Image (cartoon, rainbow, N blue to C red):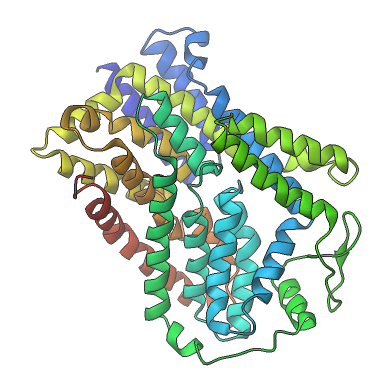
Amino acid sequence: MGPEWVAIIALVALFVLGTLLPINMGALAYVAAWLVGMYSLKLDEKEILAGVSGDLVLTLIGVTYLFAIAKNNGTVDFIVTKAVKAVGGRVALIPWVMFGVTALLTGIGAASPAACAIIGPIALGFAGKYKINPLMMGMFVVHGAQGGGFSPISIYGVITNSVMRDNGLEVGEMTLFLASLVVNLIMAAILFVLLGGGKLMSQRIDPDEDELIDDLHAGGATVPARGYGTTAPTGTKAQGVRVDQVLTLVAFVGVAVVALAYDKNIGFVSITAAVVLNMLAPKQHTDAVRAIAWPTVLLVAGVSTYAAILTQAGSPEFVGKWAAGLGAAAIGALILCYVGGVVSAFASSTALLPIIIPIALPIIAEHGINAVALVAALAIASTIVDVSPFSTNGALMLANRPDTITEQTYYKQILTYSFIVVVVGPLLVWAALVLPGW
């Protein structure tokens, strides 16, 4: 058996084990990289570890460190509070606010499950109180997370753009981001129309701040008060934005401007901003480093190491040439979109991205398909399916269901919707981004 097959079989095994067992897939990937590298490719440990992207790991640490500080000092809660107040009592706009806030959180560096864990309880709490369809509200949160998830300073965006650069592909950071945002906005709009959004248009609530704060607390949120590291008790009025929160918001804008406009490393810029904010309030952010998304860092570091082993084994080229040789490159691209969608519905989207993109290289190289369009299609097809109850995001929505619906009913609704997304989503994304031959 050739090394390309050994690497593929090991890849399938680590995805299966990572899905069935509560073991970080990055740890499994390190084991697979060591065994396949040592005994199939005859590499030494230094050669195996050469596949780790220090740039990618630093960026993940930096952006999640900065987001941890924003969560810790109440900036995230401030954003949620002001966004909900902005609807002015219009019930129909609440799902869209939840979509927008979740997209903002992932767009500035929150891991998708972290954003869903923060906003999900709040959103579904509103759904129960104001008779909003729970499926619509829950899926708005997930689609919002995925909609903002490919910004240039987001985790998904950083991974995808880094993999493209490492493989010598053209990088279209804003194209990728906007494509994902538009696709998820369209899916949210369809849900809004089909699940009773029109009936909400005539409903109004009293946008009294005391009631709003009670609702946020019912959803599990804390509301910032004046001073560092404090929260307003339920039923008290939240104060205006604090100096540390203003500085945090400025830091996020500064990271985006410096990294994008001046082409500086996002990892170095974001971790510098986080350290400065930490120095300004060291006692408040004592545990901020612990809140870095270390499981995600392990996941991406391990999987990127194994992805390098796959490349050395010739597996991506083997699979890519098979897909490209099906008679039409576009059909091969469609198959890869479905592979990404189906696998990601049960496994980690973050782990899949560094692997699925190199597989598409032969289709791009030999058939002239636009690299940005194909990678965007693969990335979106592999992440829109996170509505699945078997994924972390879908499971979080199920766990936070309102009392207005039974768990079994809600589970069936999410499962049915995720099945539709898995079946139809990759096809529509492929038809919009790949088939026209942009």
